[in-house]
Image (cartoon, rainbow, N blue to C red):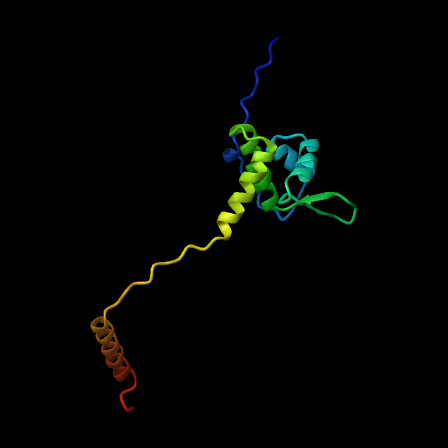
Length: 130
């Protein structure tokens, strides 16, 4: 009898339950990865740092699970090496921290005078005895 190979779920297909913490076994099942891979990735990716419980058990937060799924996608679906994935994640984090300058609308003095006049009229309506 031949076993049918199940197609691997894409990282984007996985739904993360609404929980505060996940044990390593739960993350392994959810992400369809062996626990030893998760432990190895903790040594390779600085953003993957689960907290440890009083008993020393790894407790992954939701953002840790999201990081695992992102790493899995980079390595298994996009074909990155570990060093390449680490670099890609670092670049993504730097990109998130950069602020883009918002364009400041240039107003002519006539526009500003008109706006100021309108604001004064509103103020006179709100506070008639100035």
